[in-house]
Amino acid sequence: MKTYLVTGGAGFIGSNFVLYMLNKYDDVMIINVDKLTYAGNLENLKSVENNPRYKFYQADICDREAITEIFANHDIDYVVNFAAESHVDRSIANPEIFVETNVLGTVNMLQCAKVAWQTGDDTYKEGVKYLQVSTDEVYGSLGETGYFMETTPLDPHSPYSSSKASADLFVKAFGDTYKFPVNITRCSNNYGPYQFPEKLIPLIMNNTLKHKDLPVYGDGMQIRDWLYVEDHCKAIDMVVRDGVLGEVYNVGGHNERPNIFIVKTIISYIKENVDDTVGEHMIRYVTDRKGHDRRYGIDPQKIKDALGWYPETPFEIGIKKTLKWYLDNKEWVENVTSGEYQKYYDKMYSGKEEL
Ligand code: NAD
Ligand code: DAU
Image (cartoon, rainbow, N blue to C red; front, side, top):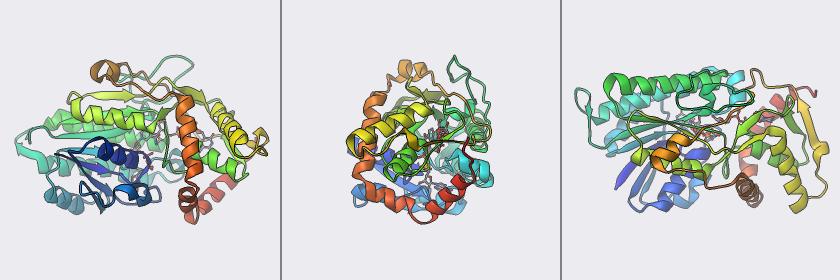
C-alpha cells in the first residue's frame, strides 16, 4: 500500500486526481488535505467519502502544526502538492494570498515533509517523494513559433505565475541543498469535470446556457494549449512512480487553440444540442487582462521519451465530454456559482468595458 498526501484535493485537478487514483489502484491510500477555499468542494468527492482508503483533513498548507500532525498520523510515501490559489485574474486584484498559499504554503509543505522523512544528514526514508504541481505560465509568453521546454528560462508575468515560479525555485532549492527527493511537473491549461466556472471553458459554457454575455478579453487571439484533466492525472501518477529525482517534466498535448475558437466551439455545441437561440451575438470583446500572456505551448517530448506518457484525449472528444458533464451536473454548477461567487463575478465583469 502506498500512501499519498494530496493537498488541494477538493479543487478541480486535485479531485480528479483523487478519483483517478482510487479507481485505478487497489493498493493506494489517499490523505486529502484542503483548506476548502471558494475553489474547494467536497461534493466532487462524494463517491469516495466512505472509502476506507480515503481520508480528508480540512487544513491550511501554511499551518505548520496541522501538517506536522498529519505526517505524524500517517506513514506518507508521497506528497503531491496541488493546493494553490490558481486564478490569474484574482492574482491581479489581490496578489498577497498568492504569496501566502503558493509560496509560503509550499515551503511549509517541504519543511514538514523533510522533517517527517529525514533519516540522517541529507538522507530520507526509502522511496519517498515530493511532487510539486506547477504550470507552464512560469515560462512566460511565446511568440508565434517555438515551445516551452524544461530548459526554457523562467519568465513569469502575473502575480499568480510569479508565485508559482517562486515555489518551483524553493522545491529546486530543497533538492539541491538538502538532496531532498523532488519532482516538478509544469502543465498547460486543463479542462474537464469539476472546473470552477471562473475559468474560460466552464465560464463560457455556464454563461451561454444562462443567456449571459460571453466576455472575451482583448482580441480573443491569445493561445492556450488545452489538456484534458484525466491525461494530466495520468502524467502525475507516472512522474510520482517513475520520474527521475530532481527532474522537471512539462505536460501538454499540442492542443493549441485561440480563445475565440474555444468560445465559438462551445456556442455551436450548445446551439446544436441544447438551445438553438444561443449564438455568436452573445460574444462581448472586453478590456484585456493586464499583462496578458499571448501564447502558451508545451513541448512534451521529455515526458514522452522518459515515461511513455502521451495525451490520449483529442481536444474534439475532450471538449464534448466536458460540455456533457456540465450539462449533466447543473446542480453542481448552481451550488458553486450562487452566493459569494456571483457577487465576485458581477463586480469583476462590471469593471470591464466593451471594446
Ligand atoms: P483550484 O483552484 O480548482 O483548486 C485549488 C484547491 O486548493 C482548492 O480545493 C482549494 O480549497 C485548495 N487550497 C487553496 N489554498 C489552500 C491552502 N492554503 N491550504 C490548503 N488548501 C488550499 O486549482 P486547480 O485548477 O485544480 O489547480 C491545481 C494545481 O494545478 C495548482 O497548483 C495550479 O497552479 C496547478 N495548475 C493548474 C492548471 C489548470 O489549468 N487548472 C494548469 C497547470 C497547473
Ligand atoms: O496554463 C496553465 C494555467 O491555466 C494554470 O496555471 C492556471 O491555474 C489556470 O487558471 C489557467 O490560466 P489561464 O489564465 O490561461 O486560464 P483562464 O481560464 O483564466 O483563461 C484562459 C484564457 O481565456 C486566457 O487567455 C484569458 C481568457 N479569458 C478568460 C476568462 C475567464 C477570456 O477571454 N475571458 C474570460 O472570461
